[in-house]
Length: 290
Image (cartoon, rainbow, N blue to C red; front, side, top):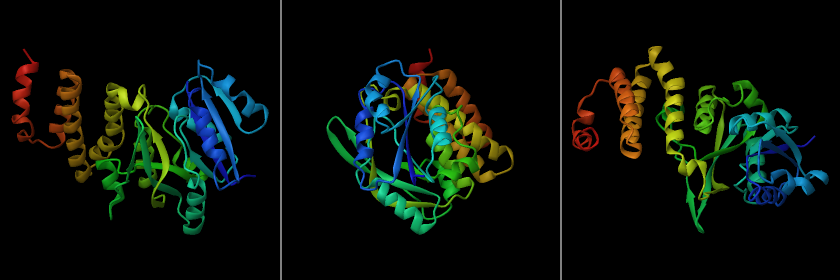
């Protein structure tokens, strides 16, 4: 039995997935398996992976398309390791990543790791740090996802919180980070860029603003609204602020007046503050609503 299962969900990433796999094979820590879940790819993914499958370098699982959370859940369910390392098919791990995360968790007794990332776009590299607060992690994770990357976990904690929500096919990381913290799963912050996050021109995260805003709204209704409606006044204020920010994004970025009004009404319902939008929003509205 291996200690670490590196799970790689993939959907039409034939061009990139070999680099992801090779970054795992180049790890200093060697007690791992690689589980690839092909989430219904229509490109040459299986053809590219065939030598790795035939030589037993990876375990390959094909399924009909379910989205990233569903592919991750499938991989986790089939993983043999005590620990799970999540790697997207178009990203990579620096050679020291598994070693540092494995020994950090085993020595500390923590359930999962938070790290920084090395962001790569158009040949430029930039380290982006997690902004871990000093206290009240739960309230702060509801305000914003302060975690740049959480990719290394004890497998059992996924099952204890119920795995990924497969309906959250975007904002899935923020959703599960909230649930881990709400469940008091102890994390360890390693202040190093142990994950290479690569931005592609056709990146879903970069291009699909409408989808991202839709699932942000869905997440806020799942967590923030639920807690607000159950009497948590502190969360109600956060929920109102979040819906106000979402309203502005719908208006400014998508010119979506309908969703702007919907989010604005929800924001005002939980914290009535008309001064938020009198200026300068009213000026902008004159040019949008005729």
